[in-house]
Image (tube, rainbow, N blue to C red):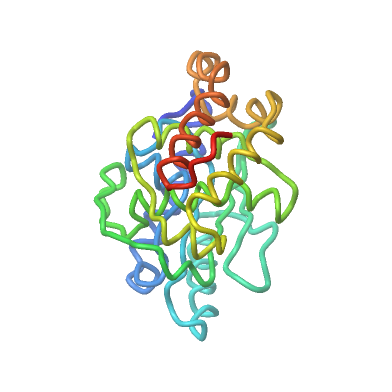
Length: 250
């Protein structure tokens, strides 16, 4: 996983410490399946920095308290401070010691329950020398496509990194798990892409693209891509919408 600035190495080290300790626990490894931007970056699917750890919880609900306890023990052993957490699911906001003005927080987010259509596989994460069960790239891409709109529907926020990831996935020729899109949205694929196109056209601005991407990409890479990110993504989405059979040109 790339680091945009030398100081980001500290955050990367904390992410890797947490991940290593989680998957060294056999019980946690059975119920927490890795996903999200950090997973994609570590596997080489994404070429940007990522700051959080995201998982799907695949265990029984009655062992969630035991899972939380194990996670909290790991945080304590590592010297991470819990400054906020969910009372419902294993979601944590953690702090580590850092110099003033530098990044010092990690979010741990666990989806309970995950989508039934999600597909997982075991992959080698060479940077930490671990075999981890994680979402397939097709599942990851489908969830990223849906999450772009869902963030706005749930809390009226839009993440520039979502647009970047969607663009990057299409540019690399990756495909998506259509069943995930249909399960999460209740729409057929063509209608979903038609709606996503409208959403990007109406809501994505230069400010949104800049907000978090400038901290997740090296400056030169960010400067290049910001000029064509929205328009190229719309091209990819229109191609998918037409390929799905709707036939409308948006």
